[in-house]
Length: 299
Image (cartoon, rainbow, N blue to C red; front, side):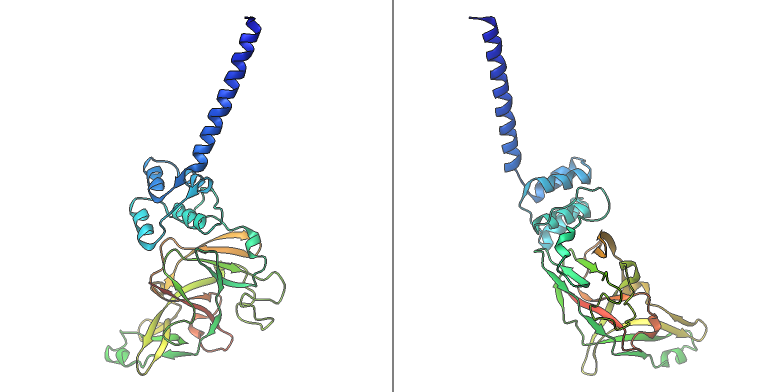
């Protein structure tokens, strides 16, 4: 047999083998289904979280993202960014493989038809807009305790919302919100037109704080309240919401005027609101224009 024919045949055979092997490997990769245990194995193998996230993005997945499933992932050392990527993957939105602290970003096109406002995003990709509520009153304690303790105990000032619970209720878990700021002059995030509201010029989540309210549900009072200041004979007057009533959050800019809000830890069940931090905390409830974007987190 001619040597050239033999050599050519070997090259053809080798090429076919490589093509077959590559196709087989590709098929195996595509058919692989990533589960909670797969993610845990990757993490315990010491892989960087960006690699784990990239793996989640590129493969089919079948995750258990119930409350128990998320808690189990956390106990196994899975980073919050990875869990966020799993949640985003499950909701049908492709996550970013970035190694930043922010969870995967939404595609800007997802917000093209949404009005300016604050939105809660559920795992199924549904966006629910928070409606601003009015502070119905501000109240100051009687000062009896301050008198009995000769001024040592403080009298507290509080801002009040009607009702023991908010109208909007969201299930507990990994909570994600979006701020969509207006691009036109005179608009505002409450989507209420040119009303010269106290948050109408806000352009960043940095200008807001998240506050946790105390729910009061008695025969005499059915309200939500938060301390906004205190007065003591020796300490004088101080205004501002106490740190224990605030919930810290992180944010990532998605596009012009669009920001993703997320948390290092899950929000506990309770009453919350986003409040414009540029307002005077001690004066909450004293002017009709003041608003709180309130909601409840349930178990």
